[in-house]
Length: 280
Image 1 (spheres, rainbow, N blue to C red):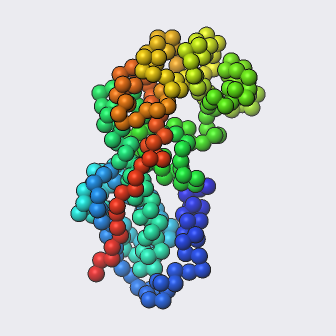
Image 2: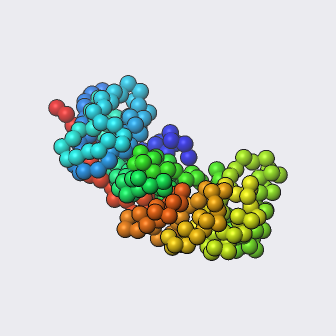
Image 3: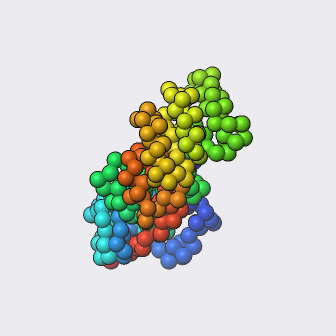
């Protein structure tokens, strides 16, 4: 779903047959201003999205920015003032706040993880554990928070996970079929493969050099990852996944693995408190 389609769909869900509260009380030509007020500490994310929403509803709308995506915010800060028709401001208010609050929560949590990795080679990846139709915003929030986006969906990378491998009949067979598929279809898609044991890693190292670009170590302990990294010897990108959190992420970074993937960046983030208030 495109950005414009999502915004129109979200507004249609909210407005339905009409914003009758506004229609009943506000002159259609009345213009006004509203300020985005910060009510909680965190990392601001979604300001550029808010600008686009107001512009989509009313091309003449003006947004005066005082803060930008990725800035640290605290209670009492003001992020922007929007000037537009009052009908535009009130139609967009809840959608803008929902997006900003959710994105800011994800960016803040992501940045907490990123700070834990300061000084280490390892970087943090998001996952596809996202809200349906809201993935673009959630992954953008991860990026704003300092994380790295993994594949966006099923179409922009081949990722051979445990179910693919088991249904196909084994890790070597799955890799062979996936690589052949990309050649036959003329697809410029990189292949990542999940490994569950050190024997799996050995198979990939011995059989898939030049075919697989990244190996995922799923539910490996840090000690197992160190051993796996000796096997890969810099020939593949590497990723640790499974059970990684704020309490143990440093122990994984200490192994030297290239990436750690954490679904919690998105599905455990808490929305932050913001408000959009009329200026008289």
